[in-house]
Amino acid sequence: MSQREVHFQIMWNRLISVLEEQALTLVRTAFSTSVREAGDLSAGVFDREGRMVAQAVTGTPGHVNTMAAAVPHFINDIGPERIYPGDVYLTNDPWKGTGHLHDITVTTPVFVGDELVGFFASTAHVVDVGGRGYGPDAREVYEEGIRIPIMKWAERGDLNNDLVNILRNNVREADQVLGDIHGLAASNETGRRRLLEMLAEFEMNDLDELAEFIFDRTRSATLAALTSVPNGTYKNDMQVDGYNDTITLAAELTVSDDGIHADFTGTSPLSQFGVNVPITYAQAYFTYGMLVALAPELPNNYASLLPFTVSAPPGVILNAQDPNPVAVRHVFGHFVTDLCLGALAPAIPTVIPAEGAGALWNFQASARAADPETLLPPVELLMFNSGGTGARPTIDGLTATAFPSGVMTMSAEATEQIGPIVIWRKEIRENSGGDGEYRGGLGQIIEIGPVDGYMFEFSAMFDRVENPARGRSGGGDGAPGRVYLDDGTPFPTKGKKAVPADRRLILELPGGGGFGNPADRDPAAAENDKKQGYVS
View 1: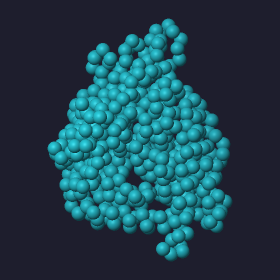
View 2 (view 1 turned 90 degrees about the vertical axis):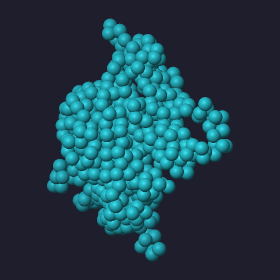
View 3 (view 1 turned 135 degrees about the vertical axis):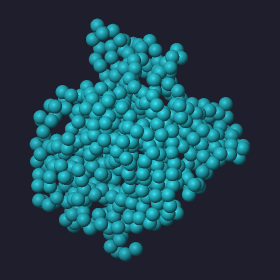
């Protein structure tokens, strides 16, 4: 390694530490549990052209990879001539941001003197954006909440109080939402200051040379990693529950010397409900799947994302168009990873896992007074939950683990602290992992209810109830999910419905598929499954 390469490697490591501090600032200042407890966020640094140079380790693919495409929109919409020191920009536009209105992306320019050298950007999921609330029932994006075009949160250091006032009067949890936006801006400011310190220490005037070094090395390493898949065309399809009607997701992957292209022709038509997926979000989870399978050790940046492209007819559910409703785009968007990995399974069978639960089982509850005459404050509650992942070719699947999103769940204690809710039970779901030489990851059982005096308006956004995760190479399917009240009454898996004040809601999350012939399972592993209560 040359002295120049050593020099750049040191600067790379320093840059990553800057980004980790940026992300941790957001976690520490966030108001919403989805950010500070679950890590549903992203943070990154970009060059002056809006190309992502590096990202923080903390973050989800749906945020990071869509944010990578978002910053050029900020540059174009603000206009290079209107970018000033002290500016802060934001948007939650689903087609210029991360795919739905509940994610707010904030971008901050970085100047050395009067010279623009780059940008910091960060994204977080906020608890409310007005409208119908977080759920799939809207028929247009206009019903889903307030839509913020790319605009200035601050100009030359002066806060846009008109925008603050508009947001305060259009969301249910104003303190939480505005607090999270300030946290996003603060995290970018932390990154900006640390980057300027770094540039001064290394006697650099900009990021250009370092960025080109990073892009050059990353792109060549990414293309080299893709040679493990023979050039050709690979197909897969998957059935998932949908909203009242089963949905087909289809992908055709074309592998070439220049990269991998995914085409989603054959996917079911757009839904009238808010389960549609902007294609930038589908691309984010396709790209993530390819990188974790083929190049898991490589950094995520402009150059590693560049070889992965997508296409789809405008009328399919993985290519939502403005103003299609997209509030819970994560449900089908998260399945894109398993969909595309499954296409490559025949080519690299020792790498690709069985299908997993896929989509998060988020619940959004609007807690309201059970007696309208009682003056109890309304509260918005959000909690992320995960089923099991698919078994891997050499090891069991992971239990109650979010793949591909990577978010953590909020603890029962943190969730109960923010609102009138009791989590009565949260335990591993016995017998939910698919059989195989390697067992699928287990789901979990969660029992929740309101405290005395409250009832819930509950937005359901669950899948894998009618269509469980499929096993691979002879492995069994994972157990499907179930949703019902504690008296046995079935509960809808999509849409808004009330949970009575005297009832509890029970969620049985799906398990992951198994891998390989169950007869080949190690007897010691099978015995341990029984001992641990994983199987009966």
